[in-house]
Length: 77
Image (cartoon, one colour):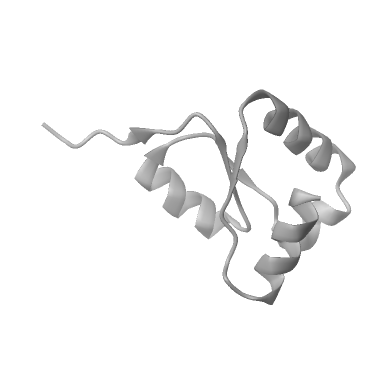
């Protein structure tokens, strides 16, 4: 009789491991961690994100601060 988690088709993109754990506890989804600014220098991670975006779509959930703004804008361009 436990509550089931909502299934999310899109990939949810978060900044760090604690964000990933919190989102994964709330919904049934593929949660992708950018490792903060680490995504800027990781071409493999960026290529995987682009592929996932084309296949499933992305929901970008970064912190409402300067770093989150920079990461969000980097990923949507």
